[in-house]
Structures are given as structure tokens and as C-alpha cells.
View 1 (tube, helix red, strand yellow):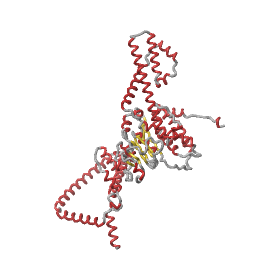
View 2: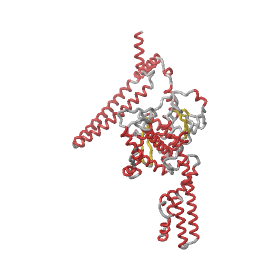
View 3: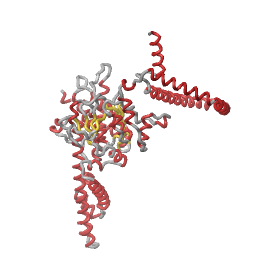
View 4: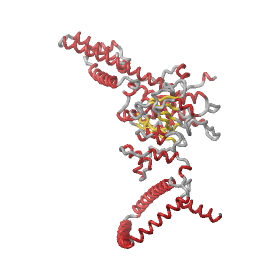
Amino acid sequence: MDNYAPTYTLHHLVRERYPRFIDAISDIDDALTLVYLFAALPSEKRIKSRITNKAKSLAAAWGAYCATTSSITKSFVSVKGVYFEANVQGSTVRWIIPHAFTQNMPDDVDYRVMLTFFEFYETLLGFVLYKLYNDIGVRYPLAISNVERNSASSVLAANIRVLSRETRTAKGMVSNAVAEAVAAANEVETAGGADGDGSFEDKKKLSKKSKVLIKSVDVALNRIANEDSDEDSNSDDEDDVDLSAPLKAALESISNAEQQLVGAGTSDEAGPSALLDDDATKRRRLFAGLTLFISREVPRGYLELVCLAFGGKVGWEDRDSPISANDPSITHHIVDRPKLPSSFDALPKSREFVQPQWLLDCANFHFLLPCSRYAVGATLPPHLSPWVDDEEEGYKPAYAEEVERLKNGEVIDTEATVAAGLVDESGDETSADDEDKKENDKSDGEAIVESSDDHSDSEEEDDGVKAEKMKKRKRAEEEETKELAKMMMSKKAARLYGRMQHGLDQKAKKVEDLQQRRKDLEYSKQKKGGKTIVKQKVERLKKERRD
């Protein structure tokens, strides 16, 4: 009976809901998030293995496209997962990749509703990926053989490898076809110019040669494949129109662009770089020339996407890695351990060992940050969200200010900062007697200064009192002016003004809280064993009294 079950498709729903391709791109945020969620879920009774495999395939195809075209712009690791943002054909797309943990399957969730959404999103992403891959000259779905799929350590790695190969191959085939077509068009024009005006038969032959030229190109062939040659010949007799001129101009522009690409470089990245706009080209230069190796304890999926999207080369500890761990070309080794094992001593000394956050922060700030702040075992700087506008919030974190100074070319003593994070408690300790001596010396010095500067202090106090009175008077005048202005407002305007002022007060209070927390944090760094100097003195006095 299953063979006689009715079948249906959702293609018409996708075409009706998204009449333009840009509309579909702008609405795939939820689709990608759900697809990545199903790709991370285990296969059980409620979720078939076919669903999870299809979700993994769609997620890998999307990730491979973003990595190849350098579409990823921002990333952020949170408790929920890893947030990503990509710029795809001018549209901003955001999605979440769950952490690589064993997912809990709650019983109070209706998975049938989720499967219904997945069925529609599967069709939508199929349309979107087909169009995106077609725009870069690659056929979708990718022709991944069983050998390539089994030899790869992940579906994403297999997709990225095949897509890179297909992109280079497709660009080479198009370049050759365009060059041949343009050369043929030039020969036809030369022959036509030598014969002068020519007879009607010559023009007819020239028109037929032009149509052969058009059919030699895949794009034009798809457009005129349904036309019949007899109808073409009849139309030539009735109306002689040169159809090859506009196509020739387009072919020449494509050929020139690809020749410039070939002249720019002959590396493996030459093929995908033809697909990049100006912003993507700038992003791809960030890790250009760098080779990163991901250790086995680090989740490789999203880090590989970020590294490839920003122009770096990546390797990992597996059989299908293009780079081995002992390769001397490795510039950065990403490790997530409290300290390096002894086995790493045999590796080349020309590489930097950094924590995974270094890769994400460099991509978010679009700047290669110093590796010393992200060394193995070091206290990491705060992982700032790239979606927070510091100017709009009215507060800029200290680390953002430090990165801004680095971008401006200022030299910052990062070694001292790292040493403060790595130093032992025994190195921080100073004796209580030394603190008392310092405080006593400070109090004696202050007494001497006070005795010598009594006269000058009295004059400064008078000036300070006058300045304070002037500020209070000016503040009172401003408050009175505001109250008079509020009295002239209507009830509706006054209510709206009150809500606006309440929002501004809440924002100012939030900024003050952040600044106070920042001061407390900076002050806590100067503590001894997590205790302030005053608290240490109190504890010392209590101890002396007990003794």
C-alpha cells in the first residue's frame, strides 16, 4: 500500500511565497537554524536517519558556499551555540550552530511540527543553494562520490573539497569556451569586413555562424535550446538581425576579467577569488598567507569555516587533513588545553600556540591581534559581541579600546598584561609589615606637606567654593528652564517626553553600572590573594589581638 500513497511537492509554495530570489535569501535565517539543529540531533524513532543526513548535507553545502565565497562577516560563541552572520548577495543572514554536545531530546516537544517546518525549509534551501551554486558556475547538488564521502572526516570537509575543485574546474572551462568564442567572433567579423557589403547569401552565412557562436556558450545555449533551426533560418530570411554583437561584448568582458584573474595568481585560491566583491576580498586578506592547525580537542566545524572564509589554510588531526601536524608551514596551532603536553616539544618552533578565541576575535575586529593575550594557559580577554554598537550604547569596553589603539599603531605592553594573568599567588604576595611601612611613610609625607602648604590650601578652597556655587546656580537655572518648558507642553507631549527621559536615565544608569564594575575589576587586580589592603590590615589586627 505504501507504493500507492499520494505524493506531493512544495515547489509551488516556495515560488508563490518568494517571487524574487532576494526575498528567499532574506528569509532563510530560521531555515538555517532549524537545519543545523536537526543536523546535531541523534537519529531515533521520532527523527529518522534520513532527516538528519539530509540536514547535514544542507548544512555542509551552505557552509561550503560561505567559506568559498568569503561570505562570513561576524561570529560569536555563546551558551546557546555559535552565532554566525554572512553577507550573501547584499543580504544579511544570521544563524546559530549548536555546540558539538550530546543533545537532550525532551518529551514535551512536538517533533511533528518541527518536521513539518523542516520539510518546507528543505525545499526552500534546495532552491536557494541551486541558485547560489549556479551563480558561481557549479552544479548543485555536488557530485560527491562514496570514496570522497567515506574518506572525509566530516560532511563539511567533503563539501568544501569538492566545491573548491569544481569551482576551479568550472572557471577554467568557462574561460576556455569564452576565449574560443571570442576568437571565432573576431574571425567572422574579419571575413565580413574583407568582403565589403557582400551579397544576401554571405549575410545569411554570417548570421548562421553567429548563431553557432551563440550556441557554443552554455549560458546562451540554455536560452535558445528550445528554438528550432528551421524557424531560425526562416526568421533570417524575413529579418536579418545581428544577434551576436551584444553577446560578444559580454563574452569579451568575461574573458578579460578571467584573464586578469589568471594573471593575478596561479594558486588554488585563484578560482574562488573571482567570485568575491570588494568587501569579501578585504576579508580574505586577513588570514592570507597563514596556515592554521586545529588540535583534536578543539571543535573544528565552525573554526574551519571562519579560517577559510578569511583566506587562511587549515589542517587538523585526521587522515584527510591536507596539512600534517609536523608541517613547518604552520604559523598558528590552535590548542584548548591548560598547558602544552610534552609531545608538542617535537613540533617545529616556528609556530604560535593560541586558544580558539584568537581566531574569532581576529575575524570580528578584522585585525590580527597579538598572540600573547591568547597564549596557552593565559587568562583570555573578554569575548566581545560584534553586534553591539559601542557608540549607541554609550560605553566602550576596555579591550575594545585596547584593540582600537593597536589598530592606530600604538605600542601596548601586552607582555605585562599576560604576566599579570599568569603570575602565581606567591609572586603577588608582599608582607603585611611592608604594607604598614608604606602606609606609615605615606601618612608622614602627607603630614609634612599639609604643614607646609596650609596657606595655599586655604586660597584654593576659597576658589573651589566659588566655582562650586557657580555650578550649582547654573544647574538650578537649567532645571528651572526645563520645568517651564514642560509646563508649556501638552499632556500627550509631556507623557512622551517623560518616557524618553526615563529611557535615557535607564541607559545612563546602565553605563554607570558598567563603569563601576570596570573600576572594581581594575581595583581587584591590585589585591593580594583576592583581598584589599584595608581588609588585609583588619585581619592582621584581629590576628594580633587573638595572639
